Image (cartoon, rainbow, N blue to C red; front, side, top):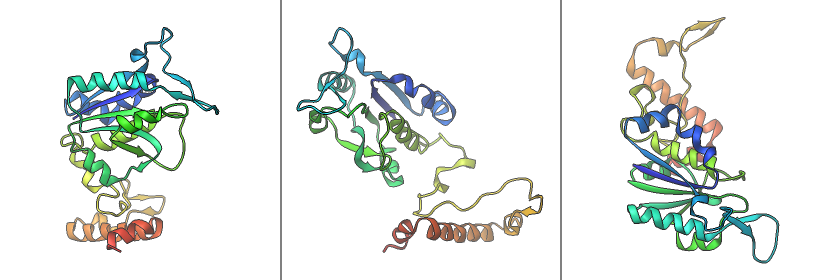
Length: 229
């Protein structure tokens, strides 16, 4: 998989892509991530990429020209399955969407900033708009990192057996069950006996029961989906 991220603030993405699982995935050659500075595609002598909105109003708007130039350059080098725009009014990111996008080969992620992008970008270049929640961030960079993380960790070989994505919350429309580690008894706070029993069948049954209990208590909306309601 290759992910190209377009941003006017590439420094915001240095840490997420250069540490932990995302870094290891790149080192293993399982994913290629390229961050593109939108200012490098500006024809303005000051490398400006934003301007005032027509009709007035507060806030600046990212211009169509540098975005179009960047996307067209990338498309001249390879074909892309999706050109994604991170925006609060996009489709909310969920595990099923992450599963789907993790199967793609090449993705472009455009990070909005200021008051967003010229609407013509959304009309003519974007194939999918994604939100990570009903709130507003200063820019799309952190949202892009969240999306990329949710996809990359699903790629075969990225996670080891101890952190398998198959047991994550939402993969089976249930939240993950409680987990414990050593010591088995800490100041009288004990790990459930079944987890120490060594009986694989009983342990899996317990985990499923706890996953259902937790989902019913915390996310009844997901529980309805799990039951097919």
